[in-house]
Length: 305
Image 1 (spheres, rainbow, N blue to C red):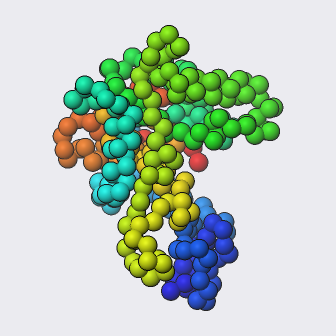
Image 2 (cartoon, one colour):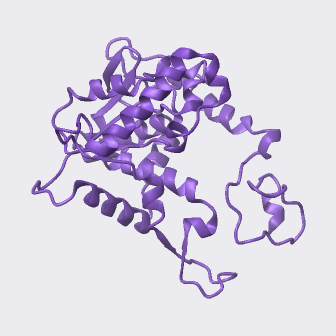
Image 3 (cartoon, one colour):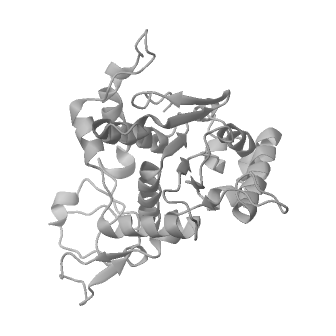
C-alpha cells in the first residue's frame, strides 16, 4: 500500500501520498527514510547516538569498545545474494587470469580520493588524499596477487568541480590521482611500460552489468524471469553493494577513517571473521595522513559528520 511509504521519497518522483497512483517504470527504488530532505539527518543522528558508548578506546589495548549486540548481529548477517556472489567471484577470477596460484591473495583498497572528498574540509583531514602515497604504503604489505580498488571512476577521472580551482594543492592532487590510477589500470599497481605490475580490479559498475536478478513476484513483471540493475534503475546502488562485498571477501582491507563505507567494511569483516577464528578480520588497515596502521578490533567511531 503506497500509504505505508508516505515517509519515503523516490529519487525521481514526488513523495508518495495516500493514493494508489502507480510508480512509472517499475518498483520504487532509492527510498530515503524519515521524509527525505525534510528530515534526512534524523537517521544519521539516531545512529550516532548509538555510538556514544564507543567514544573512548581502552587505555591499555587502544581498542574501541564493541558495537551494541543488535549492530553486531546485523553485521554478521550481511551476505550477498547468490547472483551478486557469483558475479563477484567471476570478476575476481577474470582479473587474476590464468594464474597457477592455488589461492590468490587479494587486497581491497578504498582510498576515498574522489573530488567531493578532496573538497570536504572536515573529514579529509583524517585521510590520505594522495594515491601515490597510499600505494607507497601498501607496497610494504606481504605479497599479494590482486588489488581491488573501490573508487568512483567518474569522480576521479571526471572534470573537477569549479570550486576546486581555488585550491592549487587540491587540483595538483586530483590530477596526480587521475594519472596514477590510469597507470595502474594500464600497467598494474607498481608497474610501468617496461615492467608489469600487480593486476588491479575496479569491479562495481562493470560487474553490476552482468548480474541478473530472479523475479520474485510476477506482478507487473511482464512475464520476465530475470531483471537487471539497469532495468530497475539501481545500477549505482548495486555497484556499491558489489564493491562492499568484494572488500569483505578480500584477504586484507585498506580503508580510511572518516568514510562510512570503510567504517562498515572494517566492522563487518571484524565481526564475521571473529567467530571463524581465521584472523582475516584483523587484516584491516587505515590509510591516514601519517601513513598506514593496522586496526585491531572493530572500526573506530567516525571522527567527523
